[in-house]
Length: 112
Length: 116
Image (cartoon, rainbow over all chains, first blue to last red; front, side, top):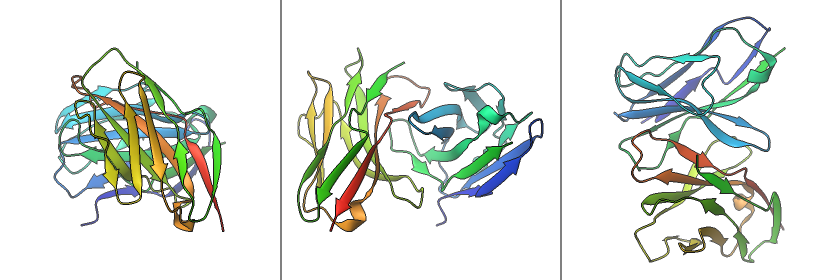
């Protein structure tokens, strides 16, 4: 099993550009989430999904969109990149509520 | 929102010795789950240990154990017989047992150095 796969691993964007971070899991987990990791701030939840077709906002959703058309995929879209979105982004999945998160390897995004 | 506090930004331990990483959390709930994750330089987030609040017995996983003090809202991680591979950032995390939103709250992390 590949687990949770994120692409790309690294990305540099200019301010105002848009892009999509890809996330796929092959464990048939119902729940998927996106977190961002910033120095000194731990991980913060951006958006999450509790099943195909269902998404909701987390703690820091502004500037990001998500959709969940299949159980496997949960892409994160940056609409108009800003330097404040420079961060490491993690996609995670879990099979049911209260189960531990399984993380992808992260995407380091730099916005100049 | 729940708050998870890791008051030790950096810790160091001699190889083969024991180290304890601290974590406290703020909640009014009685049903919740606590986790420790390890993040080595590879950036991968790895589950170390999990504790259910309704269980009085402290969780253990090989050399890793926790000291869960529910009344004090404390959840420390003890690493015994430290190895070079234990060097990493360690994050404490909290998840409500009743909230259906799948929100995990993370501390700011403790960077652990293992000295040969």
